[in-house]
Length: 359
Image 1 (cartoon, rainbow, N blue to C red):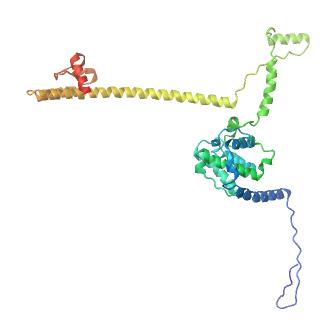
Image 2: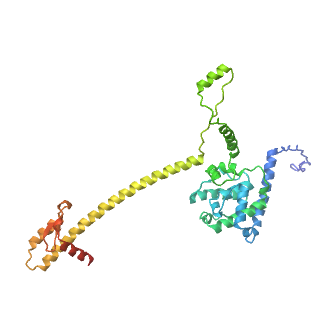
């Protein structure tokens, strides 16, 4: 009922209004509301509990790795393996379900820019859930032991305060398989990969069938002979044992493909090295050829300087003859300043050239 009002100084008037019926909230809306209230209250308080002197920062490496491996069904051996940020993303996904699109998490990240994308998803989840924690991405992506150790210590303490360890029905391997490179990551680091039970069940009958191979003493009978015998006896055909060929796993096929690519790269590199060696040999040969020309010109000039009655015109002709000579001419200059064939050089001329080079 609305309070009485006066209209233009007239008598009091009372207005009655019919109350608006309230819509009953749906069950899903109520659950989402309670869940939202729960993590809005839990997140800041849990974050505030983890201070600089919190006992969480005194947790050792072995205990921290044990916590990560047991919680996420992994077999990590180093804290530095958490540097890409995917492990922290999955821990936060367990604490706040569906706050991170795990399909965008890159489990096969190898470069810094791929690490940064994972940490962006993690920081967005912190902001969405009002967790006041700044992520020093520049330090974490360097994969330094101390930086990643402190961040994982904080994640463990935050995880313990959140109560996410009590959740059931969370399959870490299945969640990882949704992300980029998650299946390969499970094969390498997961204790139990997705679908391992199915593969074991599928291989078990084949082993039994393989074990039912006929003994060696049984004579070989063709299919036509078996059909004829079965027709005469009026009974069913005898089922022959079939030995299945082993099926290569995806990991083995991927390894074989990588080996093939590496062999092709090695072949290309060997060809490139051969071309470089050939070019180097030709360059050295050309260098020695022009060095000999320079040396012969030096000998001609020295002889001309020592002889007072030397003819400059003859010297110039000899210099041109040496400069314009090609390797097929085998032109050389002896110790007397005469142009001769390289095969006609005496041992004394060769010894003098060697002394000059050593000097």
